[in-house]
Length: 250
Image (cartoon, rainbow, N blue to C red; front, top):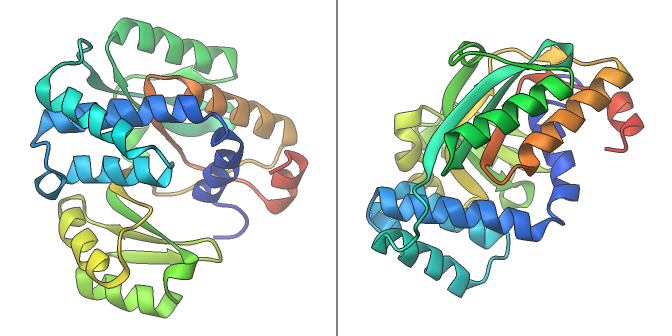
């Protein structure tokens, strides 16, 4: 795939967003609490919780903050009852977007997400209006410094993964959703803990965004969506050239 893939575009924008530590922690704490409540509070027996702890550590969240969030979820002490939600729609340039979140007020979240779409050149659609253009996959990411591309590919193949994409930033391993736990454990035994291991949406094809104005509006929409406390993850099927990314300051 030439130019910048959607995954790289997301990583470029993450640099600025990582400065919003309080907001990042809010999302991570919510995921830790819900993960602990949805299964056992033991990460060894709860893959979702294990992934949430991994993400929290990668964000440099203090251990006592992680522990408090897990205890709150396991003991049901948090008054908020978070639900998992998913919204789908199209952004500028006919880019398909999937928004996943955890909310204690569906009406508020739906209204805010719909407003973000309509005010920034997009439109929110019905359930499954764009998800058919994505594959549900298990996704595991390691820094590029972990191993060579060949070593990661061989280990992932042996672990039962479907594919590995390596570049100078990272190794992205994908597998079947129901194989995520087994593949993660096999890779952890060789390389240690990954940056993340989670279920994700992978675009089947990408939509090129070559117009600077369209690209600016699309990035604004994605930033507003990701800035929402109720939104945990945003995936989209766009691709931008290096030239456009440079113009956007990426």
